[in-house]
Image (cartoon, rainbow, N blue to C red; front, side, top):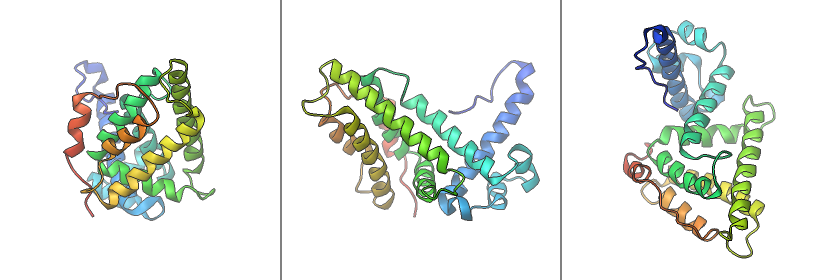
Length: 222
């Protein structure tokens, strides 16, 4: 979610400024954690990327773990605006996954962050371990619910188990992200995900033009 810093109401001026500073820090932390991982990424590096002092960063986020939590929460807020996982009809959820895939192709930094930190977080002592355990459970359950709803409407293809389809969909999306980061000129995440979903559901998977337009904005740098 992009925080609105242009609020015209004067009383919200200080809040808007603080929110803007926090978002600047979180965007910088996203880049640093994506490039170096959580363990190697440093507050010094984040402060330099945000063009502020380490003390300034720590004023808003008291630790590197708090920064990571803030980054992941902001990522989720932005993602949920695109894909109404857990809060939409079955068809809307499935189409939202395509919008999210298209959006991610225009924002390689967040894709790098997710793939880098999620791999590190398989270790139980990683500060994001519990977050990813809970997040995967939430996403699998929500997509499974969407598929069950589509099955009840006769829109899930015959022989498809909703829960298995949800697990496979998450695996497909995560796997496509890794392949895209390695071969951005060969992999179109939204197109491949659409082909995968068409094998599961018989609904119109057309997405909004703005979702498609972002797919060619930029590719990850190596």
